[in-house]
Structure formats: C-alpha cells, structure tokens
Image 1 (cartoon, rainbow, N blue to C red):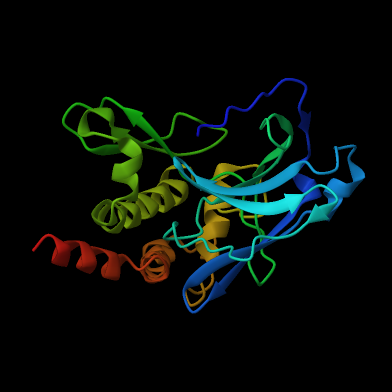
Image 2: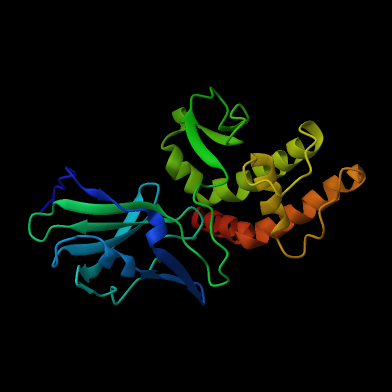
Length: 253
C-alpha cells in the first residue's frame, strides 16, 4: 500500500536538534541517533517517528517508535550505501494510521567516531549538462560554491554514472588534481582557514589526508606538484580507487 503524506501545517524542526553518529566497525556502516529533543515539541503522543538515511535517489527508513516512547530500530545498518560520503539524514513524525506528516527535520549531517563533523553540502556537486562528445567537464563559473562536475546528460543517468566504480576510479582523482592545480596556479590562493571560500574548503580537504605532508606556502611553488601527487595518492587509497577499478574490470570479464 502506498502511503501519501499530507504536508499541510507540518512543523519544521531544526536539524540542529538531532545528533546522528556513524559507526564504522570492520567495514560495516551503521548509525546511532539521539532524538530526545523531540520531547520538547508539542507533538501528539503515539505519533510515529522515523529516521531516513539518503543520498541522491537512494534511501532507507528506520522505525524509531513513537512520540512518548521513542525506541531506536534494533538494526540500523547502512550497507545500502557503499560509502558515508554525501550521506544525509532526515527525521519524520507522522500521524498514526493516516500517515499525515506532522513534523520533519531534513538534511541532518552526521559525525564520525572521531567527532569530525561531515559538511552538510558535498564538496563537489554534480550536475547533468549536454556536453556534446565529452563525458564530463569541470565548471568553475560558480564563484561562491566552487567547482561543479558536469556529466554529459546524453550519456544516460548522470547520478548512476557518477556512482559507477569505473567512473569514480578514473575520473575523481583527475578532477581533484585539476582543482588543486587551478587553486595554486590560476587562482594563486593558499589559505585554508576561511570555510566560506570554496578554495579554502578544498585546500582544507586536501590537508586532511594523513601522510601527505605539510602544504607548501606561496613561496614554495616548486613543491606544489609533488604535494598534490601525495594528496592524490592518499585520496586514492582512502576511496579505494584501485580496488574499485579492479572489481569493475573483473566483473566485465
């Protein structure tokens, strides 16, 4: 049976009211959610509470009991998602029986076990566009939000292409490298403390990889390429580029 939600007069709850914590145990991804703040809202007792994890078109729902008796789902497995990157959560409170949506908090970020909060917005956004014979292109026209990865809309479903292991392993390291080179050589930008500047956010991300060494300053231009190579090497290791491509290639026979 398809349940239709009535969005009339629903309460919008701030996502800051909730804390979502991911658990990474032996490669198994799960989560914990603190929904205790729901008790401070005037919501009918017995209303149903759900937590949904989603990324783009993939989502999964978990039953968290009801107002007045919130009980986390016994199994909170996130194996549907191959990585935590770009993952978001929402909390929904619905009327029992009718399914009317009473309250919602959307786009809730999460924290990892080391308490480093994951940015709400993905660092690299993906958009479809007619690129003729090109498969992808990086668009730098958005000065505020930074680079956008354009995937040729003529190639098929751009979201599926963007999640394809072959595409990820072959394209993303090159995209990352190009963006860093643009920041250094074209933008001539070397700061990483201003989170409101897209260039700073990318440099902060690049510096986050252990083993890449200290980022060169503006007077050490001869070291930019070597440092970028180290960052890309650590990036490839983190997202398992070689393993993804090997698995894809093996499955293709």
